[in-house]
Image 1 (cartoon, rainbow, N blue to C red):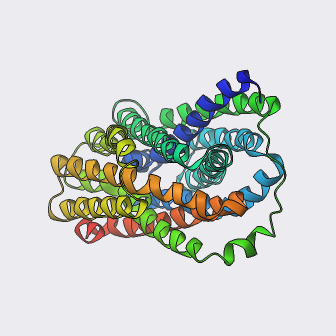
Image 2 (image 1 turned 90 degrees about the vertical axis):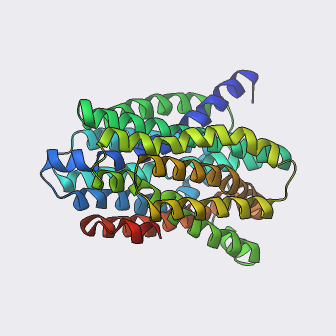
Length: 362
């Protein structure tokens, strides 16, 4: 791969990671505004969040087969092109059903991004560099969530929620073009024997440990976390402020990533997983007891530390565990993570009509 393509690929990968969580973060702060505009109940619009996560999880294995044949960069180009269509259809939605279907397409498209990036990290970097790259990836993802949460809340409050999805479509289209150019310049991986990867992974007991942890993490940090703004709105907090409270999660991840880069050189993976898990428990303890802007901000800062500390190490661990079958292994990791997110999102949708947010965060 020439130096020119290396200079293109790095920013492209981080831009794609940004898009993956930018788009995912858009709807949650706008549930109330979209429901009002589409004349639907908020819990019906909230189901689009669950469907998004469900299609994200459900298309991981098919994307692994595609990336094994096309290579990671060409797969990114295809996925971001599909994401542009899904975001545009979301912006043009005329009722709750059309919005849900559009979000399903977006979730299915963006499912390819993070596993493809992790495969490239695992294939091109030694273990010490992988740990740092995982922190950088988490930073890009959290920036996407931060900007997505803040902008969508602002658009919903002061303009229209449809503009938020339009911005995602434009970003996805730009990344589709750049990924296509970078893919022609090199970086394509050799074809991977997809079906033979299953028995390799099935024989590794550590795969089951990592996937179980990913389900638990996904329920909390992918699913339930999206309903913090809705819980604040139920307490009378304006939608714009509620969205910015969740945006503090992304800001905290960026800040904590500086600390975690130092910690990964001093502590083993199991210790960082334990520290991050303890921070998540403390965060939801705060939300269970008090649900106002100050408490939510404190909680998401703790969750930001949990993501920076535990999630990055889980990603690094899984790239080492599934070395012999990375495309499928990373896909199954994402299935577990976002399958847990489906569970968390379903619990959030259940909580909306009953305002049972204390039970949700318990």
